[in-house]
Amino acid sequence: MDNKRPSMLGPALIGGAVAGVFSGIPFLNCLCCLWIIGGAMLASHLLAKDSSVSLTAGDGAIVGVFTGIVAAVVDALISIPLHAVNSEVARRIMERLAQYTEDMPSGWNAWLGKGAGGVTASMFFLGLLFSAAVFAAFGALGGIIGASLFGKKKVPSPQGVMDATHDPSHRQP
Image 1 (cartoon, rainbow, N blue to C red):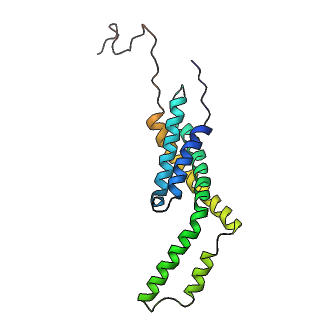
Image 2: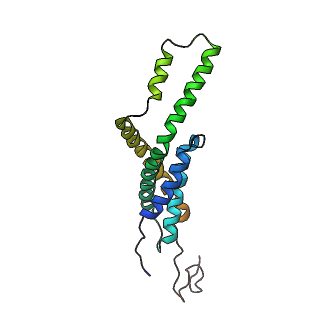
Image 3: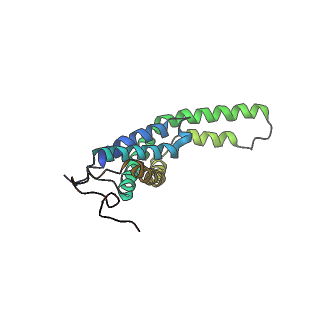
């Protein structure tokens, strides 16, 4: 039997893409960290399915970290076109609130205008780096959970060898 482990890239790409899409969609992203854990568990399951040997917690953590990094990239790419929509929604909410209250801080309109201007490249990459670190941590957790749930392989026992508890010559005191 081949004791070689399969590549972690494929499962990490699949699990990361699923987790990143669900994390990037508004109203579904409220479960962001759970999507990352679930995507890493999916990656561990796919890795265990293709592996001929049992997965260790370290294998699950590694595939989970890769899954988290892929999910961060997918999430960032999905959030680019949605940023303008989210800014517009926030502006409308603040305008509606301003109609009902006189306690809005001075200059709130200028503050909203800054947010609607878009994201600079440096802010995008800084956010991506932060997301990748957080998603990798949650991915490692999901990968460890997935490896413990899906990674155990049954070791075939050789024919003719009996367990010590069923051996007739084994006497219990």
